[in-house]
Length: 250
Image 1 (cartoon, rainbow, N blue to C red):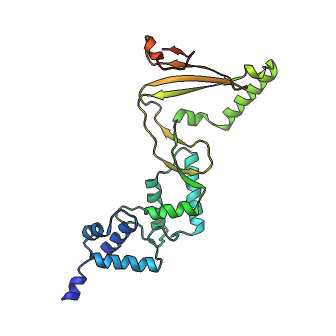
Image 2 (cartoon, one colour; image 1 turned 45 degrees about the horizontal axis):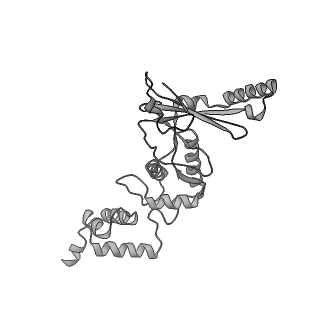
Image 3 (spheres, rainbow, N blue to C red; image 1 turned 120 degrees about the horizontal axis):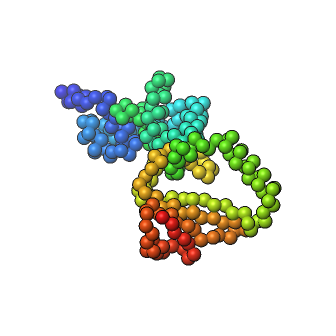
């Protein structure tokens, strides 16, 4: 009878409890209670697997080096197309890769995602990938940023400089930046290390924007910025706290 009682739990539930403890999603007590398995047996199973270095989704690579290189290449390719993968996207994707290719794994079959330990191991094995915070890039800007458009711009710039022979102090670079009233931080995505800018598509409109136009010349001299407010009438209080010499428009 005692032996029968000890077997009154499901092997699948035990695997789920082990994975949740390994992923640090639950502690021993909570996992044993949630999946209705003996705590002592759960602890013994984990100790046995740790001693034999059995992989639960993070310690040893589940995929071959070639497959992981394909996954890393896909991550970088999607990021350059402004559709970078979040952590959940990556974990779901590798679960599907393992399932469709019939690769033995111990990922969570309930959530259909890989564990965090696998993600950490993958990043260690692929140091060119890191978790980054992307800058929102509108669809219109992404479509306009292409090689012919950029080449045409630099051709026109080169011709203008040669024609008028401007001195360095008269060559200014101007940029406009918007300060939005509805700021939303983008989710971090995986991208290649070393890139100065990482983008992700977003809606073109997010509340009201105050445009700030700044400029400096080749010699490093700045001019006061111009502030453009989305309103019809000007109020002098809008200049409070602005840099000395700056101008404001509506």
